[in-house]
Image (cartoon, rainbow, N blue to C red; front, side):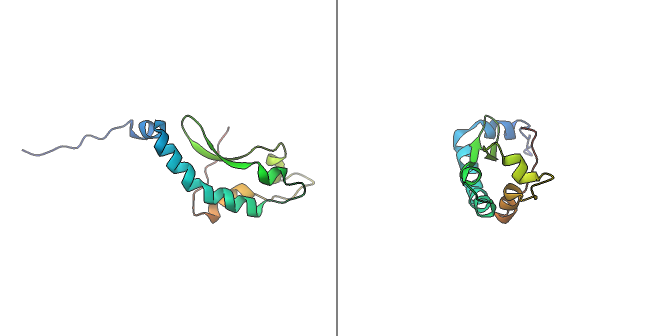
Length: 101
């Protein structure tokens, strides 16, 4: 009698809800945080010190919590594009996925 495999279409969501799984993802994201801190411009250190791994209900992400983060990552008329988060992710060998959060 042949065996059949039935894929679990909810697997990704179920795994994302597991605390140990998220902790493992967070551990894997830490090298990107470390690299991003190396790429971060430092005047006062607030931006660099605010780069961290964040575990949400459904995702693990890298975030910079300083109010200047967007300006430093994407640049302005007066600020060059530093992109430490994107560069850190790539330096750690991970893929960058833009989020609307």
